Image 1: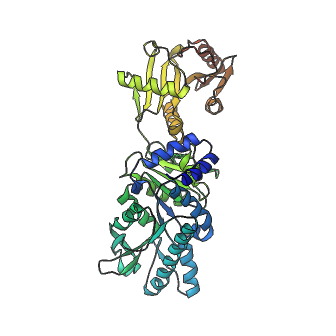
Image 2: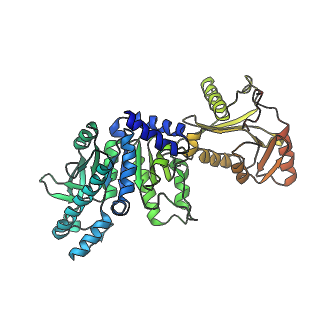
Length: 446
Ligand code: ARG
């Protein structure tokens, strides 16, 4: 990195919540081959309405030495141009029926949209190159029905990888051509999917005006772990057909990719925050990982768990912590980044002895997924947490009964009545500490 770039990086990363987090993600994103960092899909509307901001966000990544492969549509520009040209727009099954007259309008508009973005990037000091042809080899999807609409047969990565190797940002259009050289129109979502499958990027970014998926109360859903949330989301009545389709498409999109891959739906302005913080700013969708229920653990798992707990709480466990547990089960995420330790409590009720999730896994929604599993496995549960624990606000939302003493907050749910909850919480307060004492005892251990 040149000094100049480093200065920009420091400046921008400094504006993010924690530059330590940002550096971690920069390392992560730089550790994959340059070609495999990200595919970014932007709709025509964004290029139309937020061009300078978009160019600035992409320029930021380029200056960091990252080469997102930009794929763009031109939907809103096309609608306008066709109207101006007096060519009627027909859509069938969500696809633009493209006859010769339509294509005559479509082609120049797509080229112009592509040039507009490339020029804006150049104004922001980025070396960018439009790639208008030679990526998607197509046949006709159904010539009778849709006209000049392509069905992608193959994705040629040569032009894109040459560009990236030369340090240039590739900006790809959604045009394909047939073996005979006929230019064909491709739906941007389908083109994005094929490009993603060919590249297998670490990140997939969808830049949208809303900047994420919204729940039934119009609030942004921060993270979706498909293995845990997909079925239940599809059952929600507020998940309307457009979102249903989007979720299904994203599930298919991630299917052939490694588990580390993720989709982020975000806005132009939130792109850097989404990429470089744990918390993100948008909706992160991952395949999600398996959470296993273990009754005994191996030596290795024990050490992995010890590492997770000590790191999460910044404290040392007592050497005999594991051997003295009256263990019921451990719920452990397959990456080892989230775990819940459940022991035998009073009157056969389960006691949550430890709950730990790394900050990064938290941003992925793994903490919420683990909690959901915990609730499903244990209809009644109680636990305690130090009064200064920053997670307490969240625990208050999960619990039905809570009480405090000078050191602890006790929580419980699923108990038949207040008296039994009180008995449990009292038991929680009286339990031995699993941690070694430290001088500054305001740790955040449960
Ligand atoms: N920065 C990380 C990533 O891009 C985590 C983002 C978390 N985002 C979220 N909306 N929860 O993979």
